[in-house]
Picture: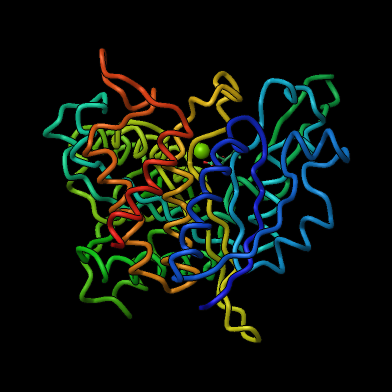
Length: 370
Ligand code: IPM
Ligand code: MG
């Protein structure tokens, strides 16, 4: 049985409690003889700041670099609102993305039939939805320099963030989107703001060229990012793969999440390029939701996005597509059977806690494998 080494970074807020449920899932896969997972844990975000005054330590960065994959919970909370900017909890996540070269962020938004009524949109708009947002993750305004607040001669302050993209950064994320579309419904919708931004003009040109040169069999359309936001709530099923930059991807994927009923449902994978010497891809898997400090520690959090992120690890890091399908089916079945955490329960419906949801998914894995 193949064995893999996972580095767990539960982080802050609900991160630790949802990570506990993933550990149970890992154990199940080992006991079932499908694959075994060695785990080590570290600190990231506010808890790392409390322990060593940094959002992630050098030791933990080295462990993340060495692991076959990183599983990440969530970071941040009001406790660290006044932490210095450079060591704020989010800096740990951004450093992991940058230093591991995780330029491709895959955020699938799937609306399970059982949850169509949990969405704030009408059932017919979201039922059966299956779209994939491909977000560029190591460039754009998140990392562009200069990034600063300076004081002008007149005493006024001036804040600058820089939106910057080079040809190769756009090419490589475009290829990821086109390749994924080929295994889906063959359509890429590229979202930018070419009507206002130079980076949007270049983005549009490069994506168009890559499409023509290498993916003439995939339908490519261009959409302005603001219009894409509107279309996502009007009729999201028109989309297959949405390809977009770091900042627009951040915003559009939160919209995508709510189409599925709850932010607690959306998993994600952040992937790097293939390392020429090891042949491996660096990867980090994380739920799209945040640390939800308001419900942290109360056993109420929905562990599905975290467990779904592990399903993505099975698929994208370990080539265990069937195991990933099994886990996705277990999640769908548990939902179909009516189990709901608070975030996805409709009015009057009974809600279960984090542990019950996690245990039900593990139990369902057992029934499916029999
Ligand atoms: C996300 C989050 C992060 C981002 C934060 C926590 C830095 O919102 O992964 O979408 O803005 O990328
Ligand atoms: Mg976000």
